[in-house]
Amino acid sequence: MKITKLECIPFMIPMKGPMPESVVYSFLRRPHQMILKMHTDEGIVGIGEPGGMDPYYTGDSLDSVIGFIKLVSSGILLGADPFDIDLLVAKMKWLAKFSFQGLGAVDCALHDIVGKKLGIPIYKYLGGLSAKEGTPLGFVLSTKSPEVAAQRAVEIFEAGYTSIKIKTGHLSQTTVQQDLANLTAVREAVGWDARIGIDANGGWDYYQALDALKKMEKFNLFMAEQPVPWREIDNLARLRQKVGTPICADESATDFGHLLEIIEKDAADVLFFKLGKIGGIRMAQKWVAVAKAAGIPVMCGSLPSTAFETAWQAHFLASDEWATHLEHENLGAIIGHNALDTTKTPITDDLARTVPRVENGRMYPPEGPGLGLELNEELLAKYAVKEMYTVLE
Image (tube, rainbow, N blue to C red; front, side, top):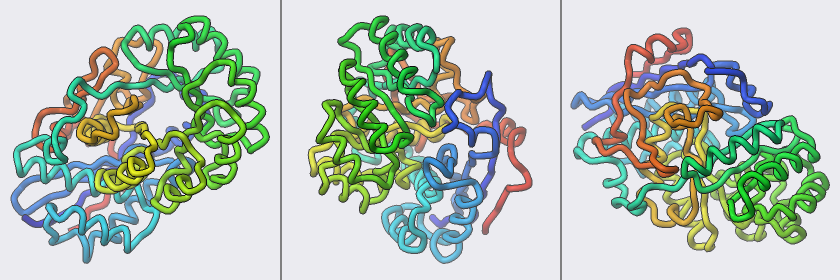
């Protein structure tokens, strides 16, 4: 089997409802998503979706991802055997560093092809099902209103979700006093046994983070995610020594060099990843192995996406034993298909005709070959950004 053609199909699905409050989500106003179609000489087509591209969070944009795929198409991908995933990923990593979402889109399509050729779901190709009873899910909440936070928290836990993580800090357009009011309202609504965390998305400086986390210790948070900017691994380590709340590295934990620095400096209690952020399943297998060797648990979240990115991650999370130790936040295409009226996804329809199953706060990978999803070609054609469409053969 050989790869014969690559299609990069950018798309933009209109928002459902108001723009999320956090300025972190400002990239949703412009084209930021893409489907990669990888064709083979046997007629099997792999679908890859890297998730929403956000220069602030991942460092990638549509232009950079399409540019990466153009770069690696000739000499690496076209004419290659899609089963040679590890070799192809290594070659792409060597040619272009830090192009993680482009690498992820290719990784996703390659795994889809392999699963389709073998007639099995990706999770079986990766080693089988470790999450026998489904992958437990946490929920991310962004609001300035304590009343809304409390109402949503009750609904989220009643729906079976394991934890809530509340967005905080100036990137979420909240002051520390507003963050404290949200946490107070949520604790009063759901009690002290519920798992509540916060995520600052690197929006505080060191002193702001220290001040805020000291004030938040009374809420018994299970984690504080990325309280300082991603480059400040030394400050993550300083905070971890001075506050009682477990520290989670997200934006700081991307490439292997950063991962090793976090471990060497004892800078985090938890490591957070997304397949698009770190380059796909093959990279994630190695990344999580390093975390396991260091004894550090991992959590996974989603980028704004359709069901293709969600399913890609669902297969990996269900197959990796170390990934079963904590809940995950793989909600990119799931929220709008569940009965939480106050937590709408920003997409109105999905590019997959079915989405991964979520029941009682647990997610299950699709059972069909490869990703196990069927592309809605009509919807993709409707929302495609035609002036950015790129074909390589």
